[in-house]
Image (cartoon, rainbow, N blue to C red; front, side, top):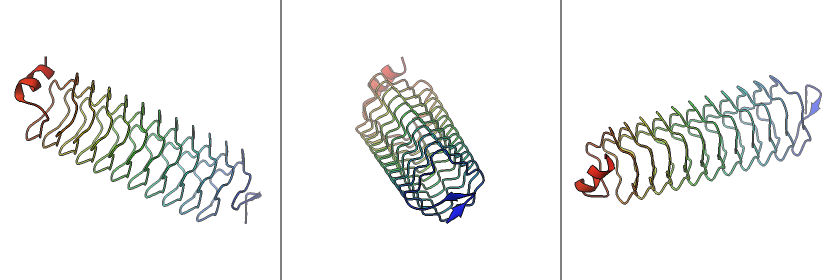
Length: 241
C-alpha cells in the first residue's frame, strides 16, 4: 500500500515522512518508524500503530479515533487538538507530549507514561488511567469526569480548575499537586496521598476521603459538605489555619 509515495505497512520506515492530511484509515503500521514524521491532520481512524515509534511526530489535529497505540512511543509528540476518542494507549510513552485540547474520551491509558505531558483543556472523560504516571503533568481545566485514576501518580501535577466529578482516585499519589478550584464532587479519594496538596476552593462535596493522607494540605475555602473525612473536626480546623 502506497500513500503519497510512501510504502505503508507493518515495520515500515517512515522517519521524517511528510504525511500531512494523509488518509491512513485502518492502516497497519504496527512497529513502524514514524519518528519526526509530519502527520498534521492525518486520518488514522482505526489504524494499528501498536509499538510504533512516533517520537517527536507532528499529529496536530490528527484523527486517531479508535486507533491501536498499545505500547507506542509518543515521547515529545505534538497531539494538540488530536482526536483520540476510545484509542488504545495502554502502556504508551507520552512523556513530554503536547495533548492540549486533545479528545481522549474513554481512551485506555492504563500504565501510560504521561510525565510532564501537557493535557491542558484535554477531554479525558471516562478515560482509564489506572497506574498511569502523570507526575508533573499539566491538567489545568481538563475534563476528567468519571475517569479511573486508581493508583495513578499525580505528584506535583497541575490540576487547577480541573473537573474530577465522580472520578476514581483511590490510592492515587497527589502529593504537592495543585487542585485549586478543582471539581471533586463525589470523587473517590480513599487512601489517596494528598500531602502538601493545594485544595483551596476545591469542591469536595460528597467526596470519600477515608484513609487519605492530608498532612500539610491546604483546604482553605474548600467545600467539604457531606464528605467522608479521615480525621476529627479539630484536625480539620488546623488545616485551615
